[in-house]
Structure formats: C-alpha cells, structure tokens
Image (cartoon, rainbow, N blue to C red):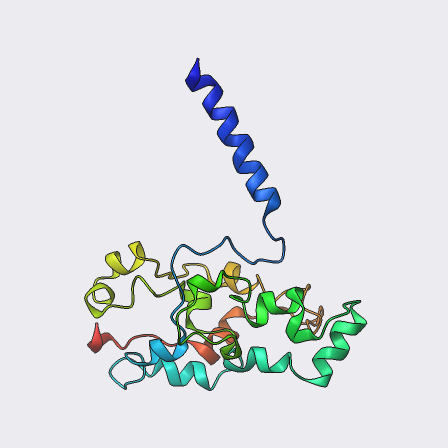
Length: 191
C-alpha cells in the first residue's frame, strides 16, 4: 500500500518543484560548482592542450556579457518591453551569462559573470572535474560533471534561436560554420 502511495506523491512533489523553478533558466540548477574561465586557463592555455583558453578568449562568447552593457543592448531590452538594463534582465542573461542565477555558494572565487559564455557554460561546472587526475580519465571527468555535447545543434540553439532579438529568421543557423570559429579540440598527441 505504501509503495502505491509513494509513487504518486513523488511525482506530484517533482511536478511542483519543477513548476516552481525559474523559467528563465536554460537548464536545471547545476550539481557541480563553477570555478571560472581563468581557473580553466591553468591547464587549457598551452599548445599541447590546443590553446582552448585563447580560442575562447578571442571568441564572441567571451564578450557576451559585455555586449549587454552597451546602449544598443539596452535599447533592444527596452524595445522588447523590459524595464531593466540588459545586463540586469534575466531574459538576456540566460544566454549572455548563463550562471547569473546560480546560487552564489556554487561559484568559486575566480568565477566572474563578466566572462560571459565561458568554459563551464558548455562543459558544466568544473569544481568536481578540475583535478588533473580526473581530467586524464574521460569517464571520471564525465562522472564528475564534465559535459561533452554529442549534438552541438541541439545545445547551441538553446541560445542561437528566434527568441534572440538579433536572430535573423531568413538566415539558417549553420552550426558547423559557427563551430569552426570556436572549436577547441585537444590535439591527438596530447590525449
């Protein structure tokens, strides 16, 4: 009898929790803390590792938050009916600084919202997989929060879509062309 009651209660509880969740989030609350892009740089800046940090630093993702601090972004936010500056508007922040609404206890001392769309936006909070001993074993790294996207288009279009006010409906999203600008593989000889 208890088992028959437990399942509906759990389902109802889960539904209520999901309904209460902030609808501006692009994903569920993280289980792993965020260490910040500069913490990732420690290992991901060398030629041997493929200079991932430099590739990110020179990308538009690295300045995504900064674009929200412009007059143009504020005008777009106002035109969309928002009463707050773009850099304070959850609908803008969810893509330009995705960890904006993460509990502060999940953010390490090197994490900066100003770093915009950074390593952990795509790869998950790195607090539990940052250790070299874990990163050297992809199974351990994934078990500790590392995210490797098998389907880039599905992931990328969570922000690069028609909800984005600068999205041009007549231009199809070419994920492969976009990926060519930001891909950052670890060279084969380093694996």
